[in-house]
Figure (cartoon, rainbow, N blue to C red):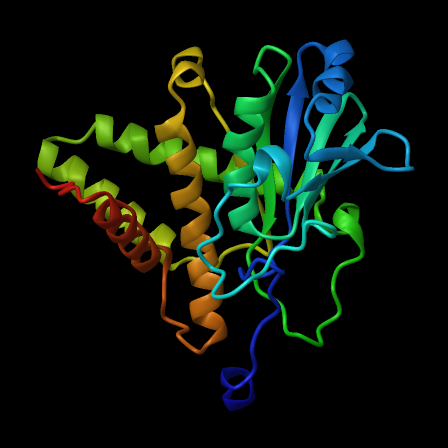
Length: 260
């Protein structure tokens, strides 16, 4: 354990922890997807079929990475933020960090209409990596759809059972106790190696999506904090601790009192 405490984890160029994450988009107008991508200057076609690189330049020039202490951009060699692939009737964006995913979702939402394609899910890794650790070879090795769906479906089943118990509770106090116990138990669970987050972007949220994007950020930020805190030896640090810390940071920066 002492060796690990002295050992930094792997980070990406923009300063945040290396944690692979894959965004999946459903295509509603497949014939217009390539046309839309080709209009975006910071997205460039590669020599591989149906593959593009997303760079930190042009339309994405002003995207911010607070994790950077000091970084000088080189206009002649912009940072590649992620890769985009069209495959099996879907569009995938592969990214090396949670922060980039949280930036990518609203950015793509602004650049490409949800009538053409809409974000569906995010598959991600609940750990950080040592500098000399063997990294997974490609996103196909990382994410197994059957296992990710099993974990997600079990979470939904567990939540539905708790919801039913709350609805059948004899009093509001009893319902709150049931929900509180469930929340505490979930927060203490060991996070799976890989996990799936499913988006539920309604028409109303498409028109005003800020809260939708904030919820995604809080969800991922909590898991990022758990991975980092536990890497540095805080084995008792839970999702509940991460949620408190993230919400305080987010709403504190906004100058809001969420208890009002």
